[in-house]
Each structure stands twice: as C-alpha cells, then as structure tokens.
Image: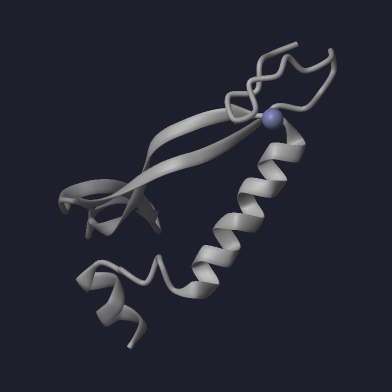
Length: 96
Ligand SMILES: [Zn+2]
C-alpha cells in the first residue's frame, strides 16, 4: 500500500509501484585515470575511465501503473515533438 505521488490516491495492497522520473539534469563526469583493473594474460592492468556527459535523475516520484503509463505516453509525445533535443556537445559529436 502506498500513495501515488502523481494522483495522490492510496493504492490497494499488492499494486506495483513504478518510479517515474519527474526531472532530469545534464551532468558531466570527469575522466578517472587508472579506474578500471582488467586481467590481461597473467597480469592485472589498469585502464583509464574516459568520463563523459549525459543526464541524471534530479527528481523521482512513486506512481501507480496507470499514472506511470500516462506519464510515459506524455513523455514520448514530448520527445516526438522535439523537446528533449538538447544533447550535450560531446554526445552530439559522437553520434555524427
Ligand atoms: Zn496514480
């Protein structure tokens, strides 16, 4: 039992709870030298993590399946309309 944070209605027991992303923000991750250890033959070698840029979740809500489905459909419609076409510069150059 939980209260859906989108429609504010208490859900009956054994209803699936869906985490819905309400807000996301662009982030950059710095490169980390010697972050990964990998075995090459008998020796352990250290490799650098290149870092990068992307989006991370800023705000999340617990939603009931119906609200989650409606939210997802709205998000897909917004995506088709081109609202999320603000890729970070490094990601954009990688796709081109
Ligand atoms: Zn709901």
